[in-house]
Length: 393
Ligand code: MG
Image 1: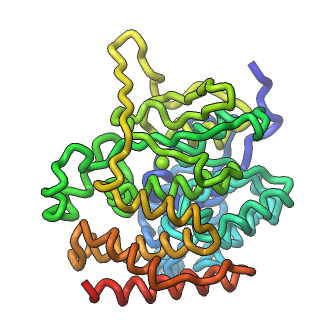
Image 2: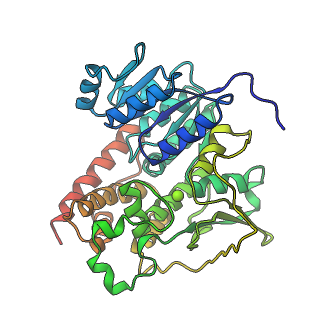
């Protein structure tokens, strides 16, 4: 057993009230000698955030991204005395760079975590990254900040955490390819002709994982796998043709690496985010998990089959963006966010999500971003084009 660290790692949790946040709080509560929660932030769920601050007396700072929610928090009397309230994106950056923090777990939905991620690395913090959109939007800036930082970039997304574990200590030139597993989402077994009638309620029934609405729809379209392929290419410095996806309905093998000699390594654990979150929070240490490991005394079936790209055009489009490089992944991400929001709002059909993304990619071909302002400008322009495409069907 490795010795306990001299003091607990001090953790900032951005995105505390979502499903990743909930799993992270379970892990932190289970390891009081190793992890100490010092700050939490949420988008706008004031009551949940206040509940977390009361459950974890070590929390000294809270943040609310939404202005009206932050106003309500200031006068609510919900937070214990002595807690400092931060607001907006400046508030997230202040929390990501708190002098006393060792590690920032970023689990903010969408791209709002981009600037806090960069700020955390620039401040020398370890960054446990669960927000894949941050890499898709501006991966080259995040990777440059990670290279210059004394902090470490630790992937939390289950596939990337699996790849990180399989690749650790390996020579990059010995890696032939990586294979990301995909559960196939809610419609993997539906006949293609029924997909035109899919409702938001259908899309929100994920077979294996309990997650927020955006990522659950992305799992059903396989846009989530597309975003993850883009993220993996960037995180691990690979060529587009070294990144593949395979359907694996049980979500037990979280990803595989194939080396140049044909040997594969895989990472297996139950389909719960507490496993990759704990790995990232305690890294490089390990400790007893908060959930039972896989039981090999029962029948454990592991099936793999190829992904049907005609059923999942958003995976094909993601691969095209990886080949194109430059700003194409950022356009893909922005268009997908606009289309999924419209679908959840009953303004767009399920099959039209990929059509809006494809139309936006065709219409919007910006040059690669040279700085952070250009990254945000590309994101805004792609959202404008995608919003216009919603009404062109
Ligand atoms: Mg994933």
